[in-house]
Image 1 (tube, rainbow, N blue to C red):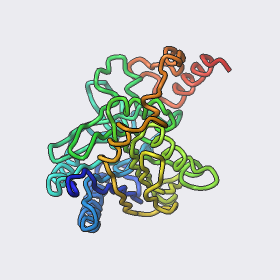
Image 2 (cartoon, helix red, strand yellow):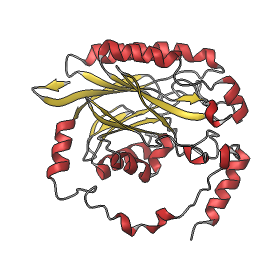
Image 3 (cartoon, rainbow, N blue to C red):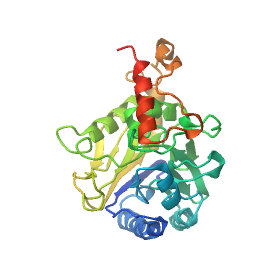
Image 4 (tube, rainbow, N blue to C red):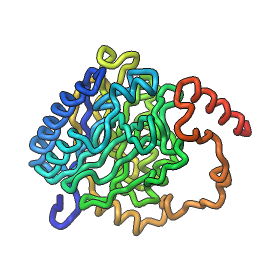
Length: 334
């Protein structure tokens, strides 16, 4: 991790091409394969620069193939911690690394019969942070957002202070909301991790390629590294969408350090993370120091509500979400 006293290491963005399980029994084979990919990443690339962070994409364990909340809850949702997170902890201890898991469909009975889209940062010390997707891909995702629950009291944007830097994560559609990544950065993030299932035509495929544009922009506007793993399941594995992969690592000036060519299929991508260089730039630069230049008082819109909070997760159906979107549109001034 430390090269001549410098906090510099490799991060690995691992993309997967799994068929989607129809029930919880299908999760274990996915975990089996991802643990093997961790072995490949750490042992294969370690001789060049130690791999200390390994990232997997959204829906790596299971995807919301069922259209109703009740079906997701009954067939695919699991609590956290679970048998799978225990296996990741063992692997993190074996190699002294940090693992950003692909997302789980999570049930937490403290909040009733809702499902969260949740990823865990796991290290040698166990589960370090648990992030639940805030900006679900509505109207099709019927997961609950922490925003939906009036009694939600946990940290919405956790940042882990670790020996390899301060790590924050957000999931897929979250990244189209710059406020999400700005808040993680305000909470101390130095490396922003993106786990994603960003499909064509908005993914890493020209001419749109929102994936690359957004990842680079979030890096430069927050003076952070971005380590982004995208789903790479083929159409035959994951209808009705195809997933272009394109996993990438971006430095704090928006420079692409490495990127997988677009297209389905398993890939492991590695690139260097230099935390000391980032900290030096944040301390010394005067120009393009967007964090220090931020004039927060000039943005009164953030004192207003647009998308309505759904009390207790009610309205978590495609029809209910459509009603909420219509209400949000009525709150806009254009």
